[in-house]
Length: 165
Image 1 (cartoon, helix red, strand yellow):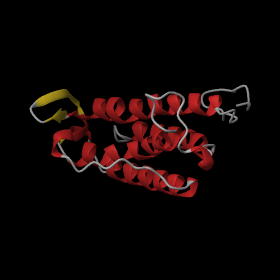
Image 2 (tube, rainbow, N blue to C red):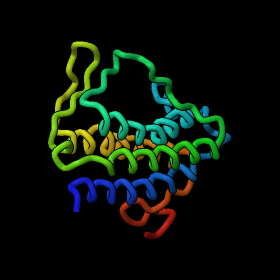
Image 3 (tube, rainbow, N blue to C red):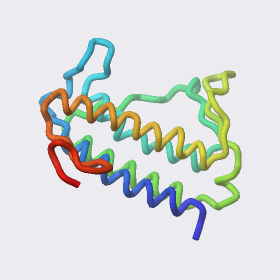
């Protein structure tokens, strides 16, 4: 068993949960925001869908520099586009990470913005922190948005007021 196998198992498990949340995002409410400083619902859902793309630089590069530019936020136009992008990103993430050797997981990985180093961690820790925890954080935000819109919430780690586990 490779050291990446438990992480990939977690990705598959959490991706299924995240997809159930994304399936509930009402297309007609993509522009809705709970507060003027908040992301719009469609943008937040798009961000949750795009976060698995971080697996590629985590697997293939020793660092990611936000100052290099090239980032264009994913703003889905439709619910089907949102889910298709999510599914593709999850598949790409599993493929990219699945190719990592154990010694690569222990190598250092750095996130920077130009000369500013945001963090430097062993690659396995960066996968958990930068990608997975980031997804869980925004998925939690998404659940609050959906609750405020009276959208029934799916079970995540147990039953919700709307759905049993």
